[in-house]
Length: 454
Ligand code: NA7
Image: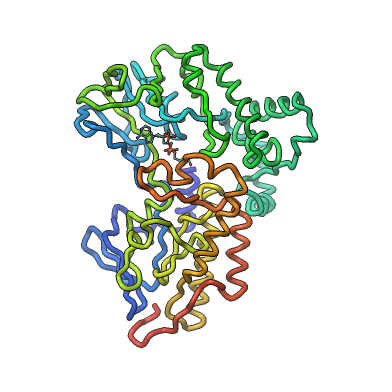
């Protein structure tokens, strides 16, 4: 994926317009000028009519605040800030906290090199075999030949380049359903979730059946029944980010890997060379924090733009991450977000989603310019309606019933709110509908005398 994004940046000659290693320290809207003033840590100031915040949905690292953690004297890495240089695990006792996508994908790799790995797990997870493999020549040429159709179908579906079927569970016997699950488990990837039966993420009974199927697989793979017990997920299947792994559960069959269940044996403190839990001490040389992010809203709050009357986003978003269309915020004229709260973000292929959002933003800016206007801003009324619209979609599913970062539940004190739009294709249709309908939910300001709309 990195190679693809680098290729894209080269092909469209984007690098000339990017200032690397430059941190925005302040972004402030000037109402009289109808412009944003942006300051950087290099003491440079920029002025622009529009501010597009592509700050990433998963950027602000979540670091646990266990007593003594800062006194730990060994190497310490957060998976979201992994060094570009190779990290050596050889001869080291490594502690890993966190078993989300990052932990589950890192643990098997670390275990191959380390003397010992101790995994500190708070919530056991569902994870499906990724079964990554090189594509065959035939597959590659098929993808290239069908490129336009694939893009169209990706936009119409959840962003994935394959058809999903519309099987109904009630048309199959329990035995036939198990055969379907087996087949999809063998195929790997997210098929078991999106391609088994309609309603897996909405129907409790069906969801429980799929969840139990995965638990059965974990029991089959993990040889030590005590370890398998600790690894049994007990939330609704698929309602936390569904994880794809390369031999994660198999890793617990190695004799250099041990698992601490933090639900029954919580961490009490760190010493310079160990983790002390309620039941014992675990000496470690290296700590890997796979503890995730203050997701989606955290990156925008880290930027903390100041809108009308100098009101900061931190003030506006104290108890709810209000936004309109996942892209704009009332009180913050001429500001746009990509992958912000209320947008599909991780629920759609992110580069494609980002591209489609950017196209919409470009159209909106063009509209402002062609009409000789000075500013565009969402209304609070539109924000309220949007909030209802995306929550109605989420409430038809099992997602809101699980403590996940989608709900803001991973960060102590963070307001609980479903942070995404679950139906990417519907979302992008809505964007177009709003634009074609004359930008309902927005107010436009004429150019003020003082301002220069450049
Ligand atoms: P995630 O999915 O947020 O996972 C973080 C993991 O860290 C998860 O297992 C958390 O347990 C655990 N965690 C977080 N804080 C603590 C503390 N204080 N103590 C113990 N364990 C903790 O982040 P990832 O980086 O793995 O993945 C992020 C996204 O990247 C992923 O969803 C994909 O979209 C790509 P919890 O489950 O909250 O109990």
